[in-house]
Image (cartoon, rainbow, N blue to C red; front, side, top):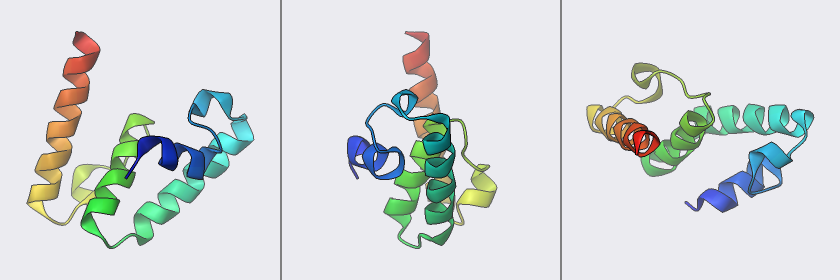
Length: 86
């Protein structure tokens, strides 16, 4: 999944901060619903990743049934934290 495409799909722009507060709230609501309904593991992971980057992701044990998916999410979290430090 393409990050810009996801941002445009949910928020109407590639920069969430450019969206109005109402558009941000509506986009997050749609994103949460789609995440909850998504059954494809890779698409679900992509949606969770976007939620994580926006500070809205559910806990890993709630979000993912498979340990491999939880581990991939932990790796992403570590990578993003390391990039913030550098």
